[in-house]
Amino acid sequence: MSDTDLQARGTTLSGDTDAEEGAPPPVQTLPLDAWHRARGGRMVEFAGYHMPVQYEGIMAEHLWTRESAGLFDVSHMGQLTFTGENVVATLEALLPADIAGLPMNKARYSLLLTEQGGILDDLMLTRQDHARIYMVVNGATKYDDIAHMIEHLPDDVTLNLMEDHALLAVQGPEAVAALARVVPGVDALVFMQAAAFAWQGHDLWISRSGYTGEDGCEISVPAEAVEALADALLAQPEVKPIGLGARDSLRLEAGLPLYGHDLDEETTPVMADLGFALSKRRREAGDFPGAARIAAEREGGAVLKRVGLLVEGRQPVREGATVVDADGSTVGRVTSGGFAPSVGAPIAMAYVPAALAAPGTTIQLAQRGKVHQATVAAMPFVPHRYFRGVK
Amino acid sequence: MSRYFTEDHEWIDVDGDTGTVGISDYAQGQLGDIVFVEVPDEGRQLTKGDEAAVVESVKAASDVYSPVSGNVVEGNAALADDPSLVNSDPEGEGWFFRIQLSDPSELEELMDEAAYEAFVAKL
Image (cartoon, rainbow over all chains, first blue to last red; front, top):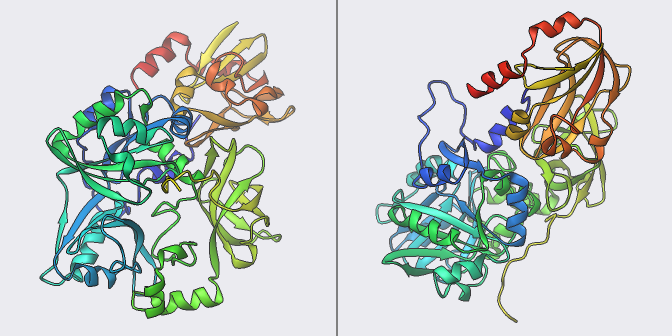
């Protein structure tokens, strides 16, 4: 037996570290490294760090998160702050988000764009006050992001990489109830709202958001306090530790793209079906990188579009499989795929020609010499259960 | 009946000139949750080392190689409906296929249970 696809799949789990010539940098450890190992975490390299891919098993962890609450260590991600009177205008020059119109303590999903409108990274940003923005970027791209942004920063805006902070996520229908026992008051937040909290003398920054499609929070915590906080969360009966494997299957079911796989520099927001990240004011002003191309694509449609696929049968179709037409010619590509535990069937994300992008369209996929039938499906595959407040 | 193992974590139980092939408990533990298995059709001729079956976990797809040469006499049809048998009973109900050995001397190159245990202990 051999893991033919472990390499390809390993790419998913090892993030987007470009395989450049020369010796790879040493794999780094995160503050919870020993904590994961002590709890049976099977460690793999991801985004340049040793991280747990699973504890008891991906399927069980996935289903537990959907029915109760999962604790994720996502400390590999880049936590940044930008401070300075001109911080809003500075970042708006790099992103299509309406930051000026963003209320304090509201989080927004946005995209770092090239001049051609390609996606350098996807990220979350929050205004902490009029002159301070907190941003979370992908772990595998954080140093490239910083290099790109520093080039465009005026002297009076300061970028800080919060290397002394860890990031936890608690996700699932019971997540906020469990977290609120540890950090009273977090249940007052609604989806995409954030606030500062104090816990045992430490400053936390908690956002009601996540990457699973479930209700839950992401918690920025000083590295020296993260182990105690993780212990306090795990002491809640609803909470189990969840590895990267289930994080990937959960986000796939939620229809959320993964940078380096479903998104890259060749992908535009319109191709990626992330038009919601283009704020109205910014679209009308056309004053962000790649605005002209993106406006043209919004008008005339992109050549390729990211869609969800329900795959017939039981065999997973994974990243690297191709979309083929009746003649067997390649017309698109699968960028993420796997067995969806909550759906009970294989699902995928793919880029397909615009003519094949409507839900219900039947398409063919080729993988290792075998053709699979699939149907374009609306995403998410599993409904989002965000808490938007009591109406 | 004797059981042999390969370094690629297949096992084969041999009874007369017929062998039953599966993957080891160690292998299923490494793969994690099995969600799909493709077994060879009856009548397929396999040479030792051929890709005989495919096993897919949530994480990855893997090939299962034939530990011996011969003629497939049966694939385990139960795995199509319940691939998790490979997790729950890898060295029993979760077998992959039965094969009529064409060259039983190939078994001499395989490990016995004790040798396989020692092999896995070093991984």
